[in-house]
Every structure is written in C-alpha cells, then in structure tokens.
Amino acid sequence: MKQARIIKYGHADEAFKIQEATSPAPKANEVQIEVEGFGLNYADVMARNGLYKEAPKIPFVPGYEVVGRVIKTGVEAPESLKGKRVVAFTRFGGYATEAVADFRALGIISDEIAGGEACALATQYCTAYYMTHYFQQMRKGEIALVHACAGGVGTALTQLCQLRGVKVIGLCSSDEKMEYLKASNVDYPINYTQTDYKKWIIKNLGKRPVDHVFNAVAGDSFKIDLKLLGYGGKLFCFGAAARSGKKNNLINDVSFLLKTGFVSPLFMMMKAQALIGVNMLRIADHKVEVIGTCLNELVQLYNNKEIAPKVGGAFPIARLAAAHTALESRKSIGKIYVYW
Image (tube, rainbow, N blue to C red; front, side):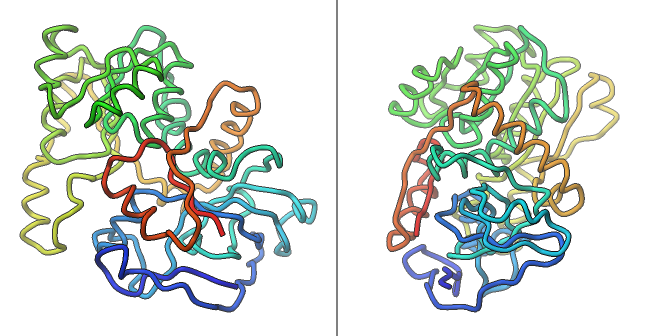
C-alpha cells in the first residue's frame, strides 16, 4: 500500500513523502479499509508544523478520517461489514491507501455520497454535532456565535443550529466568505477583519446576548467572547487556530496562553456560565461509542437531506501540499478532501 508520511516539520511542500508500506492488520475490534480518500482537518496543519501535542513523533502518517470499503474484519468486528462502503475515524494513519478503524466509530454510507461529503460528516460534523446535539439541548430562539463560520466545522455548526431554530452570528475573514454565509442563511454574518464584532453585537443585539459560543481560535477572541456570553450561556473551546503560523517554542506558547487568559470557576458560577473544552480525539480514545452515535445520527440526517456538507476542494494525492496550503491559508470554504 501507499501512505503519505510527515517526515519533517514545516512547509507543506517539504513535509510529506509518499512511500510504500506494509498493509495494517486490523486488531480484534477493528476493520481494514481500502481507502478512496481522506479528509483534512486543521489539526493536521498543526501537526505538520509541530504544534499538535497529540501527534506522534516524526515520521508519522496523519489523518483522522477516511472513506472507502471494508476488506477485512477483526475477530470482534461484525463480518457483515465486509464489502460495505464506510466513513470511519482513524487514530492517525488516514493518509494511506489502506487504513484500520474501530468498527464502533464508523458509518455505513451509500455509493451515491461523494467522498468529500462523507469525510465532512466525520471529524467536522461530529465535532459540531457533539456540541449542538449530544452534549446539550439547544432551544429555539437562542443565539450562537460561531467562529470560522465558513469552514468545515463552522458550516456544520450553522446547519445544526438551524435545525434547532437557533440564530447564528457567523464570523469570517473575507468578502467571499461573507457571500457564502449569506447564501447559507446565517442570520448575522460579520467580516471580523472589517468590523469589530464585539461592538457590532452589543450595538445590534444588546449586552451579553449570546447563549452559545463555538470558538476554534482561542487567543484574544476568548476574552472577547466571555464578555458577550449571556447568563446561563456555554462557551465551547475546540481549537487554537490563533497559535498556528508561529514557531514551536516556550515563548510563543506562554504568549498564547496569556492572550487566551485564565478563568475562575467561581466567576463562571456567579453568571451560571459553562466553559467546555472539546477534544474529539480524547472522546474517540475513551468513549468511542459516543463517536459512533454522533456519526451514525449524522449519516441519517444526511440521508434525510436535513444537512448538506460543503466540499471546498477535492485534490488528487499528487497535490497534497496544495490541499494543506489551501486549508492553512484560512481562505478555504467547507471541507478539503484528498483522493487516491
């Protein structure tokens, strides 16, 4: 089989090497998948730059999700899965023509769903679904603030909030993305590079109007969001994009932590607020059934045409570096997909 390994940290043009490797054998609770393609996530960019603490040491094969067909099952995995087309989570190792995945964290999909759309249902839509549907019960008429609203998780959050009747304040960074948010029926699209979103929200929606914050950026935005969060509100932190683009050293780490700030649970208690950290890799490691539940319910929503993943780009494996560059630029819209 073939796999794309990260052999050195840094620019995408130099970081990857495609090479031959031995096919992985599934463990008892795993299936072996012949991979059509895989999705990119911002954690891949962080890992490539040496900024993702969860990643193995180089050289390693990144990748959290694949789409393909089951060719072999472990002794505890249902044999009925063999031959099924699936979207599945991988604990790294997804950038390969063959991969293994826990059978409890995969979804059976039809041949009609495009590979990029299927991969979007995995890490990005599952992350969003966990926050909007699994972890809590959102209520009609509430307001959600979504950072990076034009991205893969942002698109998923928008659609899932809309299913609950929740109004969305969507933040983006360009005129093109503003048009995308408007086309997606985002209630309050804001280009934060041109508009101070804190001032705009307070002026137009009042003091502390936000019931749910979905923040994948951290840094300075975290402190701003706390001032917008209403009484009884929840702030989900599921990324640290503001840390990207800087060298991996102690000074930058400490600077980033100071910018993000520290919160006392006593102050959160006084406002009846909640701060929730979301790391789907940890959920997958320790509560794999949760991942499986989220993914299979999302597949059903897709089949019912209640959600519509957006694929921002589908790249052949020869253009893996270009795919990474597109995601890292933060100019991409929706899911980035790479196929063999």
